[in-house]
Image (cartoon, rainbow, N blue to C red; front, side, top):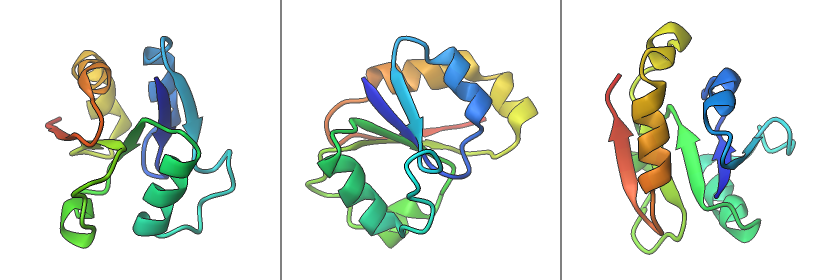
Length: 105
């Protein structure tokens, strides 16, 4: 699965998603894109999942009819995220076309 990490997503998490092709917005020079533009660009580039820590995304964007699955981490703390990598990996693996999942950490 082609996965995009948003800016707040800790990059070390990528080591726990080895079966996926993980890229960061920084690597693509997309750090200045706003959420709506970022989602559209990610969809156009063939990404299947966006992993983000932006908990306001569902309030800021109309996610209806989006093809990109979104996985929201409810913490930005790497130590807390690190303790929950298996739950996060399961959420990414289970993500499907247009799904929205919040992972409590």
